[in-house]
Length: 157
Image 1 (cartoon, rainbow, N blue to C red):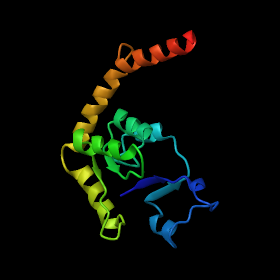
Image 2 (cartoon, one colour):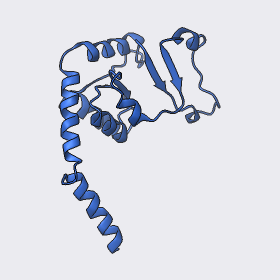
Image 3 (cartoon, rainbow, N blue to C red):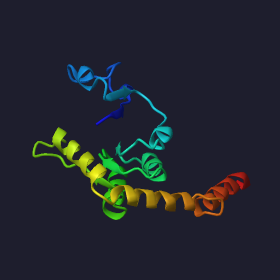
Image 4 (tube, rainbow, N blue to C red):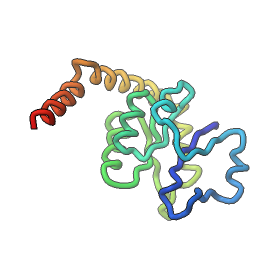
């Protein structure tokens, strides 16, 4: 399955990302590696089938506002709560499960992606959630009122 994998390489002490030996050759022609991508533009592209996300709030909002199902891989903090909403409440994603060694196996990731793109319901629920999110962002929506109140509060202070 074709993929785009964005990895921020500057998060480690190394200056370049350390991929397994031969990895770049194995993905040639079906995968693309990047250190940065315009996430909103990528997620809005109609060819995107799912979004492997750490479930940070900004990524969660961008995935939801584009109607994209999630493969959830949270790391810390609120990401676990966001994953719970994505998977258990909104039902627009699947979480990855670690094996007995605490590792997310290749088969686990492959299985979850396969489920998201073949099982009916995930895309439909994601698109329904997108419609709800976009309606709440309209000019008379709650988010807009809250932002206007914040701006007013800052100006008045």
